[in-house]
Image: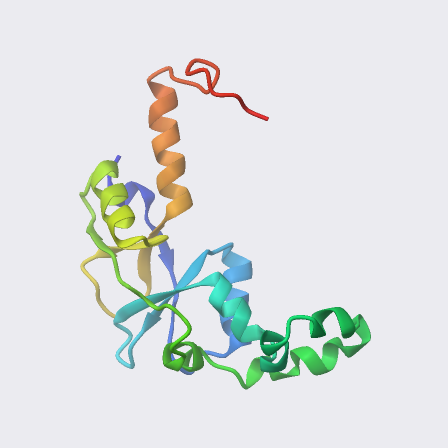
Amino acid sequence: MRAHDLQVATPTVQRGTTAREAARLIADGIRIGLVIADEAGVPEATVSATDVLRLMLPGYVLDDFSLAHVLGETDSEEVWEHLEQRTIGELVDDDDVPLHDLVVVNADDTLLEIAAAMAEAKSQLALVGPVGPGEAALISLPAVVSAILRADEARGVTSADDGAAVS
């Protein structure tokens, strides 16, 4: 299995992308992260879906999580009204948000090469190169793990065969 077999076309976001737009990309595509592109559209970093979720929350809730218990559903309009004002640029500028350097793999890299590159970089996303403007071709960690398990199962190995207890 090669990188081109696992890649999925993924839209990129830019600094001006709103929290609502980023959240929609994550929700509609069931993505674990997004690729941030520069002004020319060239991918330059990735950000996790968890950090986009943090961007969606008001700062006062992040400062004091106990407020989430106090605010009810009737307050949700006020809580979510800022989604159009917050942008990916805020994540890029936030020192507490870990932006991940791009892990770039070649389209003909093997599953083992992809897994090793992602493990070494501790990245959940790999970009299939070459990197240029426009949509990015991504490989997610779940896709890599799934492919490894499929390859393992094709060898006839299952959790029952290796004595692992599944609960």
